[in-house]
Image (tube, rainbow, N blue to C red; front, side, top):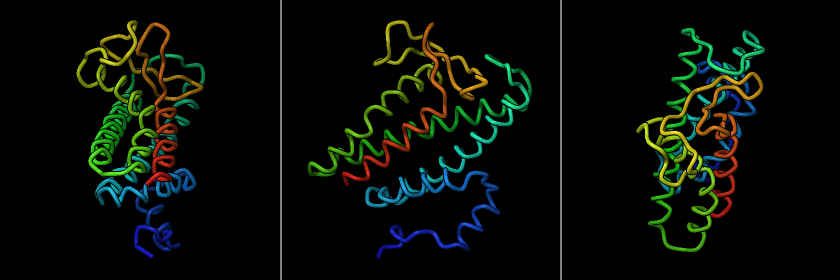
Length: 193
């Protein structure tokens, strides 16, 4: 059994919880399970995915805390605590985009139908990440976005959905939804590789 296939032992999980103060171990373990297969593509992708998982768990906890502090918020809350959360959410999104972009590129270079199926499993989340990345990182509309998309995505703290971005007059994409979709895409892609 390869090292990447072995489940993490109890001491490893204790060390992870202690060093990263992970509040939702089950969510982090979803990231660990969904990312194991990435070692077959490139070992550093596992670290990137698991790092995104750690940050995802922290951001979910921060979403919950901000929702407790501002239960009726449906927009921006301007304060240092929220600014840090907005910036970390943005950095998480950019890291997720780079993971999917790199992974898609590497899989396309691999021969065979299984790699192609893995790429197909990642397409929906890749399109969502592209739609957010362009207005967030480049202040431009996404090329494959919708006509009504803004050239800038506006951060918003939604009391029910947590941190996200308004990308059009009717479009709001929560970071948590993107994370859920990324986890699902990684899991489905891993089934094909």
